[in-house]
Image (cartoon, rainbow, N blue to C red):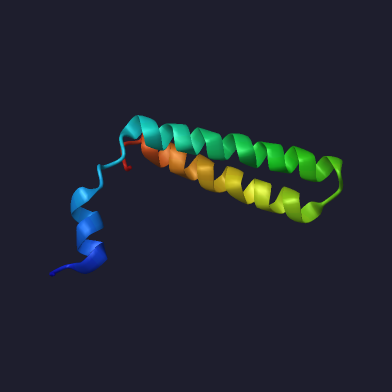
Length: 70
């Protein structure tokens, strides 16, 4: 058996479409905003911090996706 599990998955996994990547990014942004709002509401700064991290990462990925880099 050549390639092992990595070789198997590399050959048998369909590539993600641009629409699927955009939907995942928008879902991440929605969750990030929700974490920020909820974290500020219940005064859990760590939750707001991770929510803002999700928003920044999702925003950068969405910009890259829209610019054609993804």
